[in-house]
Image (cartoon, one colour):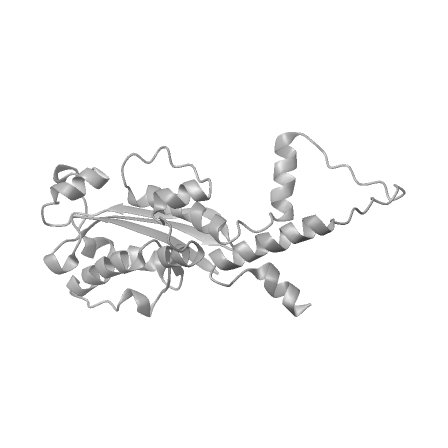
Length: 239
């Protein structure tokens, strides 16, 4: 599956009040691996930016004065995201602004939902961690994703951080391909030693009753905190 992690920055909070998009950042994920492909564009909103918004992202009216209008970058943007699953944190906000921009176009583009599926990582995080803080900073801390370089919000930077958070929150990247392993081996200058087929079998140490009880208690805690979706308990039921 091709996924696009997307974020935007805007002139304010409400498109219904005439606020517009000023920055779009997208990073591509294919097969749960970051490909290195991205889309990034600043946009002239044809209006002033709220002071409160400038304090959040640091983008000024002067900086955007010579940037392209949305209608001149819309086709390229749509071409990059078309057919992908969009990964967005607090998706209703960004989707609302993007659809507002589409509505303003003279050539009447369809709504975003008509050519992309959308996954809201805020909703996903609330399911996994009910009653806890689930903003991007909190998730970075929870999943050990470095974000010390994030002094201000930025669409591309936040999309890159969210991609790392999403992959860790949903199980990490898939196993590297054989080519990736070979590249890693060559880079390290080390060689993999095959295991001696005549070696003695490994000793099997079974868990004690106390350890089994502690394990079951831990699974029960995970079951409660995850809203009843502890996969290890489900596997045990099937067996």
